[in-house]
Amino acid sequence: MKTTTSRADLLKTIANQEQDWDIIVIGGGITGAGILLEAARRGLKVLLVEQKDFAWGTSSRSSKLVHGGLRYIKEGKFLLTRDSVRERQQLMQAAAGLVEPQSFAFADYQGRKPGRWMFAIGLVIYDFLAGLRGKHYFSAQDFQMLAPHIPTADLKGGSCYLDAKTDDARLVLRVLQEARAAGAIALNYLAVKSVTYENEQATGIILLDVLNMQEYQIKAKVIINATGAWADDLRQQQGASARLRPLRGSHLLIPAWRLPVAQAVSLMHPRDGRPIFVYPWEGVSLVGTTDVDHSDDMQQETAITAHEVAYLMEAMDFQFPQLQLKLDDIIASYAGIRPVIDTGKADPSKEGRDHAIWLEKGLLTVTGGKLTTFRLIAQDALKHIAHLFPSHQSDQKVSNLFARPSDLANEKQLNHTQKSRLQGHYGESAAEIVQIAQDGELDFIPGTLTMWVELRWAARHEAVEHLQDLMLRRTRLGLLVRQGGLALLPRIRAICQPELKWNDERWENEQSDYLQLWSKYYALPDKSSIPEWRNLRQSI
Image (cartoon, rainbow, N blue to C red; front, side, top):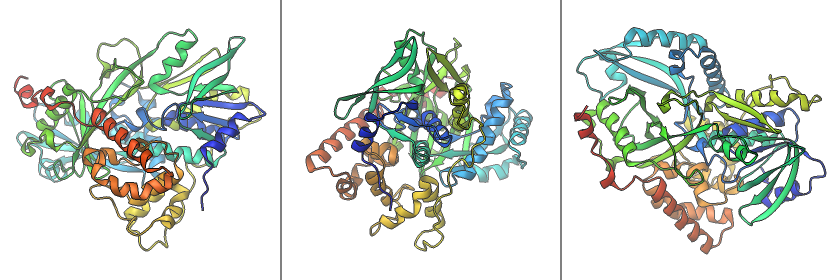
């Protein structure tokens, strides 16, 4: 059975190192996790530290799409699209059950852009770059079968194409799991107070354990700043100028029975022509996304605004008028900050999504880019420092993306969906999760695709330090169940409190803190502040 090294023992390890680390990665999102994995597989001695929880930032609040970037074809970014679709295909194969195919449907209405033929050309190029071929266009009658509840007036037909979706936080955790298996260490709630310099070159960091306020000073040959939208913070400590434009993307989650979609449905927003989507995710329907400048405190949680709620609901009412969706239908919301390089464009959506790497006084900053291409971004970062490690493998061709998951063929009590989920989410640990399940814990939690046993496993093995870690990132129950999963908390407590070794007072404090956090950042804003979106449509 799996044994997990305690946090205290890991801290002793980093404090008592006789030799410097090869690489210290700052940031526990998908970019940092990807660099950690690629470096560890090359035999490098590597440590990752995260000031909050793993995937606390953008990597748990993305649109959760592993896509090739169809819109980049229109911008002429064929190489970016090629790389993205190839990585998408590899992820679907290597992490089946975690990265899953998702068909998108785009209706073709008389007089609406982009029009059938322009869209068809883009899809042919899109599939060609991925090495795929398939039928894209469907008659109006057939398209209504693929995307029911859409308006039929002026409907000429529609196009379908393939992309993929994931649980973004679980993807980060799977990458971290693989990195640890390769010898890396990753610690959450370990903040970098400052980067230390010698002769104008970064040589180490001063760390603060935010759980007990103890400090550590450690050194490394290379310090990598992989803090995403927060990357300018460390850069500005050494006098560099800000180069990022934080953009907020907000989303809504609605019960599948109220917004039933078998395919992902894409549309252009009737107000500004921006792409909007809704697709089935983890048992609910996910609606996104906005793209607006974010000027609030970056150290605090991000939340959807009243105008963003109205904007997304306006799009859903435009595409699904007969459903008559209401605010009370919304289960939860979330908002994330995208790390986008600032080029001064007036429209935030026009800013590029390419990643950037800057080496400044020995601090290597890696930021921007897409969830889909995290592995290529990591490989690019390591290329910049390969000359410092000549005895290690600098070739970017490193074996399989993920290790083969444990075999569940003989687990007769599991159906295909359960097996696929456990293997995709937990890889080599899948069989052990089945073994620790108690009565009824292999069942799905009602209204979700999460099994009760996943809570037990997370509490036992996945560095849960606060209840919010468990509800918002190890599982996504805080997004999938009304009131942040309040009705589930008694059973969750029975499963997890003994595993976490929290006393009653600790559990009750954690529960109170979590529910306050959820109400402030994941519930809707005051409903009286949300504009009536149907009036907005009538004013167009």
